[in-house]
Image (tube, rainbow, N blue to C red; front, side, top):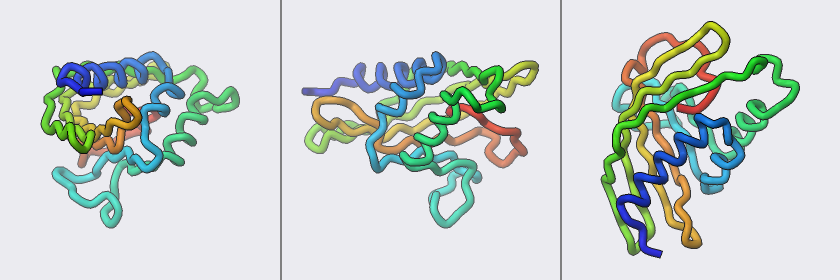
Length: 159
């Protein structure tokens, strides 16, 4: 299957919609088993392993997060947090059809709310996608917060 620019852009929009609608199991199914979700602590940070990050989660940690968000006994999520992604049109930075590897970059505003609390984050998301068995999957996702060096409360969901 040939992947078009529109396929990549639609993928990024569809992923954000899944998160906004709380379809976390479907979202988790987008990931490759060796994928990582990374939110650096420092501007232009290059190393997620030897330098502290806001988040650096492998598929095991992402599954735990989804189980917690879906859990009936997760009292910190009663009522549940909700989110809303407002995306600019994603840029398609790389398309390697031969290897089935693709990279997109998307600027967005992310709002997360629970009860009377609401936080707004401005960020850039970089998706590294792979085509596996005719389907696009997330190999890695990097989320750079514009004010990454600020003090944050808990980010419950996934920008």
